[in-house]
Amino acid sequence: QVQLVESGGGLVQAGGSLKLTCAASGRTFGRDLAMGWFRQAPGQERVMVATIRWNDGSTFYADSLEGRFTLSRDDAENTVYLQMNSLKPEDTAVYHCAAAHRTFFKRPYYLTPSPFSYEWDAWGQGTQVTVSL
Image: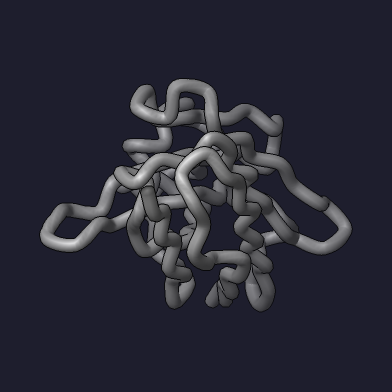
């Protein structure tokens, strides 16, 4: 089991920045994971925001972000960060960190480039991000 702990959420004015942190521990498969951030706004479905593949560092970002968010990682600490800039009220949501080591077809994740095919089976508790006008 992979354990994920998020931090860094809070209240910020529109145009401001926040940096979310997700620390992974437990069975991290030798850091051979894909890790990602999802968000869920009130009354809406959870959506994928950004992901990173640990094997090659490749990243995915949702089109709606318009280049405002950036993922980075700390290999030594098994930690990923989500730097969020130029925040908008529509970014308000609970942000969850997730990890995957295989696809829905039970193959290693690194054999499939699309994070939408990954079995995101480890989740953090979530951190609230609120952006005010």
